[in-house]
Length: 441
Image 1 (cartoon, rainbow, N blue to C red):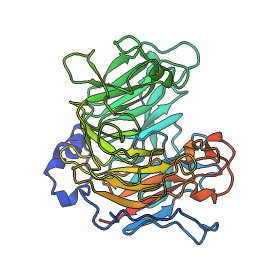
Image 2: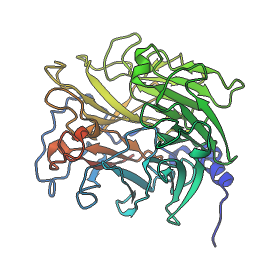
Image 3: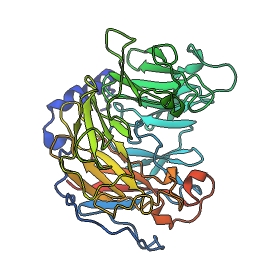
Image 4: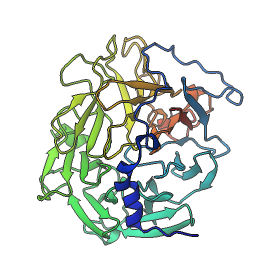
């Protein structure tokens, strides 16, 4: 018997019904089979022949290289933004991007199933399994690709909205939320850091609202943006040029609030890469009191963004200053605090003389419940900086965790052993591919 579920039914099952499920059938609250020690692991040295030597994770983790020259002659990576979801809502599909900008969808088991023709990084719907949302048709139309029917349909023509520029232009970042299902897209400029508009489209209501970042008491051009999983909060991030003029790291807007002009700065100590859950925000920041370390993360609720708490009660020692991360929280739940995923990278001596420590250049799961627990997934095996200390962007690990919290995909150049790729300067001359980490619980 075939059952046709309405969008409303799917949303109710995925969101409202989630709180009624027993916890053992939901995403993990802890990862007891993974390492949680603070033992230093020496810098990774890998063999050059990965046909026989596949990189390994730590205890309780299986690692596989899921892309190769057989998939694409050019490098393959995870999305540039952690705010888009590379995993389907049912955790059964994920996509990777090639550095030229093609998007390839795989089953969880690693079988290629589609290459939708989007022009900018898409995101999977957080509610409807197998639905990929992105920008198509010359960079101006929001489209949906259904993996089940292999069909592409138009959702919203951005050229029909106020503020679309004359002449050649394209839309920027696109993200989605879960309850209600909303899609947000920035537009209005002819390139990155030139956009001044953001449209938030309500999928079920077929309605939208438009934010003008230059007119609504903000006064900046948009570098990036995000929606929290609930769809209630929209965050806009100013460009680097606007930050130098004194703008906050980001501005938060309650889309359901009574005053559509009410914006709150994401302060204090909200800098660094960040990820959004349901009405919550996590970011890497060692500032704000207490012993400093680069590997400190903060948690705050979005209805009170000025109040935060540190997630690591006892930071690592000796202190690291030059350390970064990329975080992802697509396993977030509406009614319980679950761990988020992050991957770290750092600068070594002479730029930062701190010796190697636990968590350096690793994929991690970090608890948000106040316990301070950190579970170690494994090394990301990527050289992330050039000899002069400058960052190799596409080689940085940008993990994407599945909604069920059991699998992670991340970018790696496997310590430079995958061969050369000079097609993009942000590869550092080294090919990148995507690794998948499967976690035991």
